[in-house]
Length: 247
Image 1: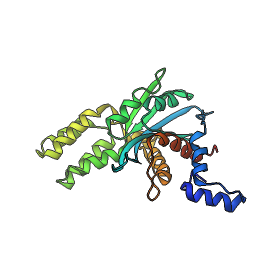
Image 2: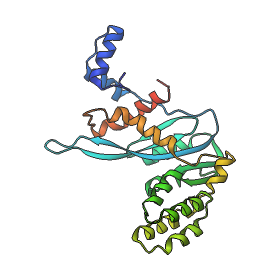
Image 3: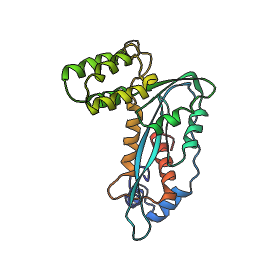
Image 4: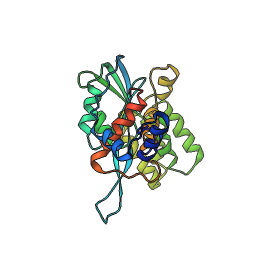
């Protein structure tokens, strides 16, 4: 119940369903004291994706709350996991899995995501793919000629980065310059999306982990929720254990 509802509502629901009365503080204490073991997949992991979420952290007395980042990872066709300010734990969680010799890794354009992915599968190889939908979002930020944007979309769908840069270099707009820099930075992660998609080789978007973040946030971002720093990691573990159907 605490994985789905606020502690107050969870305590009420436990009473309704079992006849056992438990205070919300006692329920909270049970959750924070629980030791969680991380799941290990029985299947070889061929794909994974990483994304960031935000959690509202309670400030010191007299101070307001603030939103801080956590990172979530999805082992495709397997487990969820999320970590707050524990990047090494996330890396170890992935690398302790039975990884395929070639691991496909998907993410958006944030450096923090790729810094994590860069440490995945040290004994094998990685296929890094920039999320197609994030790429298209940045393309449309360029604005200007719809014809040029459509040409750019077709070129990128085939992974033709150099041709796309040439197309937008002549635009002369600040947004176009920024987009060309973005393409140059992620050049090795912009693949032939058409081929991968049509041949069903692997995923081309990080929607799986974005969905994971949304599902985690259904508990962490319930109305009025604020968390103390010491409890965030436990709640992430509880929520992921629930989503992994391991409770």
